[in-house]
Length: 299
Image 1 (cartoon, rainbow, N blue to C red):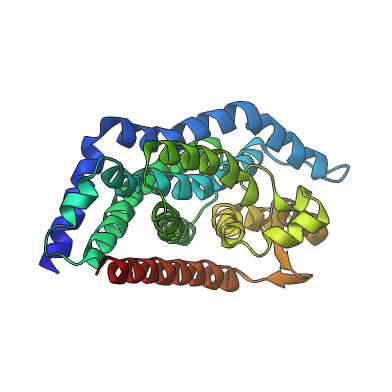
Image 2: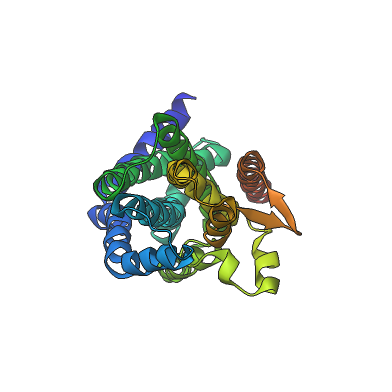
């Protein structure tokens, strides 16, 4: 345990000491928030307005809450995974500069090195993503706040779970990488592609039916929906208080992926939690197995 603590401390210090890596990870959620608020805010707002029946209108505060909830849920769903990949690049850098070879010359078990990278990446990513969540909550407070204390706690829980998922996923993928070129390629693919396949950039409901069925098998889809449900629960509660038609509210929830369907059946929020946590468990089991097999091969 003492050795693991030393490894985690070493990796975490190196991550925060690398200013380029740290600021890239930290600034990504902020840039996304600015870009979303600037270029997509009006589009989201108009989408909500167009969904209202003739004769119905929403206050600017409620519209701001709708837009803000959708924006921050998209940002956090993407950032929790992309930041995890950035913070976990140290594992690949150690291979690329031969530091890993020197470390494995010590009597420390390779499995401890693997766990050291995982937990240090988890800690670094949580620090950045929880900070980003705080900034996002300030933004929502400025445009339209309808979240309760329970909603905030659940949103932060979603961030923690998604960071665990992102760190486990990046650990498995980074296990096979060993050069700076591979780091850049994977980072680019994840940054540009993950937001689409998890439904953050564009709701899954707007994709073709066949693609919707495929994406329903991916845990990231449910992670995005979790964040969106908790970010917007207060908004929908306010709509119900204003006596908006249930069909309208359900239509909006379907349109922005608060309601997800698997093989035609609605997926409950508790099931979404179970899916993401199960994915974390499976990915961690694969990561541990890969390192066990690597250890046997080295022997």
